[in-house]
Image (cartoon, rainbow, N blue to C red; front, top):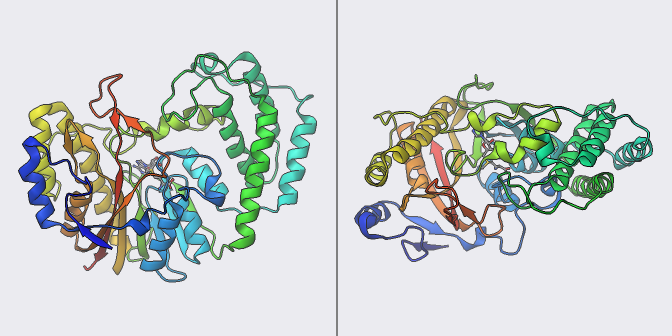
Length: 427
Ligand SMILES: C[S@@+](CC[C@H](N)C(=O)[O-])C[C@H]1O[C@@H](n2cnc3c(N)ncnc32)[C@H](O)[C@@H]1O
């Protein structure tokens, strides 16, 4: 592991913030750790390839961190669990897992990935769906813009599959096919593939819905079966639709040995919109699709002194020189993260570890050192900084461009590195 300061481009040492970033880099040492890049290995392997999800954890990274910072049968918590890579990896590492997310699709995917089901049961159900497909009466839903995103033929074919999935008695099997249908819905819709936000494509998709659903089912059955033949789950995970910012946290104090999480990079308007990514599937599955409105930083908060991070206020002064309104967006996001930390810290055991995997995005030309801000916030809550390791995001599914200026059409490359920040609770 090599110690580096600015030579890997972690910070843009540019005119106005040159002094500031130098100062930050003097105070905090970060380690560029190439062994954590897992070059050539996809972020989501095996069962974690069931259903794409934006900004997924790299499964190898999570497995290694769980191994280093917890022991067998310990409780691991991920309060921004997403598609549940941390849930899968905790299970196969013999840890007990608790995970929260506000996006019902994330909860659904995480449950499917962590529920081994006998492949014969899944194949029999798939055969029944295919057999009944041509006779079943569709019952198309009504939701805004359905005709904009789906052709009449698609609306009929998806409705037929949903009707057949709804009639499955076994809850685990039903969930498995809902997730498989969700993958199919996105592909047969009029949305551009490989976009996180909903953008309409010009040429309609040519794929046949039931055929694609069947292909996806085969793929997912294989992923599930292969994974759990090799890896046994020792504890069932506890996966819940919980808003970490506002809901009661259903955990005992001092119960968690390791908190490992990758929170959103910023507010959902200007970074990844997990809710928008999931919206069409959620509308079809008749689940709430307003999670972007509840995500961190979506409620504007006037800048105040309530966040324990001197670095945040230095950065805000730079952003506000460019755009006062944007500095308020930035503040609101960090304010919310800090509230979440305060709500959860008592749940971590004294001596337990907190691992935040974060990205340092750029707003109005200023890089936001989220890793340092997290260390300062956690420091004020009785945690000491153990280390920060830096890895290439390269093989993680992320949009290649984002809109940091928030101006339609104006794009910039997204982050190259992510920061693995490890702290320990001392009091
Ligand atoms: C970077 S993603 C996590 C990805 C995850 N590590 C994975 O492997 O899929 C951040 C997640 O935080 C969730 N989130 C945002 N605000 C939340 C809140 N207030 N409470 C719980 N989850 C929230 C989003 O829905 C999203 O799934």
